[in-house]
Length: 485
Image 1 (cartoon, rainbow, N blue to C red):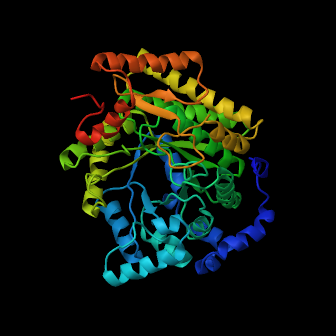
Image 2: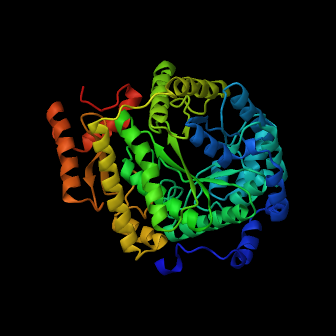
Image 3: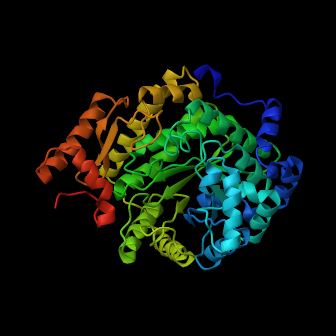
């Protein structure tokens, strides 16, 4: 089974039959014409190209703000994004895809779209881009003044990629690990990795024609107390797998943990580690940028307190020098936000970004030590993965998940060991209460034991699963660390 995949570059001409089968998956697939798509991309002004804008921001030392957003109807979706662009001041825009499309259930997405039009409100939780097709999606791209990205959560995103890239979208989120293990229960990694190699090879084809397409693995994973070394390992593996297929513009992500020093250290180490492992594979012509996701866990119900969480996320993104930040809204705890609340989240974040743009997080021994911990842990995971794959990162990834060498906390996938258990230390940094089969050296294991013992002593309790539960709910209850009452 594992031998069926490899990290080697797919032959474009060998994909001809597979592409025909993928494009036959829904009627709009017949609208895809690669020659026409390349012409359309090359005619777009550079300010609408996502990868170009990210590279400019990196060079300028700026952190860009991007919301999440998506509704079913084309006109309404364009109106929503224009509002976030004009009233929210979004530097970059999303098109969040609906759940039916994420599961390749296009008939149900079609019914949801038709009902949404009849009802005059979105009955889908996103934009069904496959059903809208190439021509309609181009209307969206051309209606905006800033670049737009496809954001979704799809283990098999091949048809969605074909249609949206042909339509002129210049950025595409996801990967064979990050859009499988945290999202699906029974999708084998061999399948999702191979399906995403198709997406990355398609992206590589556009690059070969002179079109920059930005690719972004999903950094937060489950978004619940994910230690930096775990998310970094997945991001770097997906970066390697993408670059081997010809991707040249990569944005690697990280989800906010809440401890400011750990978040800054994580952002500082992500690029260092990515460049190190890409260079080791001979992949030196890739532009690496970073994205910081504001808190992905539970939010306070109160809007004022929610703005506090959002502002801390903006501060971490600015001080960690992320290239962009994914913005949350003050309605996170209440359901789908209004466009006004979404715009407020963007403006609040941009205020913090603007004030901190010229400030640096002070260099200190604790920050340096945190960087070293993240680097050592990540290297231990990645080096073992490479060893298990005998040099092949695709094979190594499958074997590592099977062995628990990579183990994402709280993931639903049956292909994830589920033996790690994170908890916060006495300063609120994320550590391991249990590291399962993560290939940590004795000094790293001792470090995690000591950090949680320190918290246990301060709280007069033995570190246990109750700490984990308390930490999961803490921010929604107005705290960072789940202290006993």
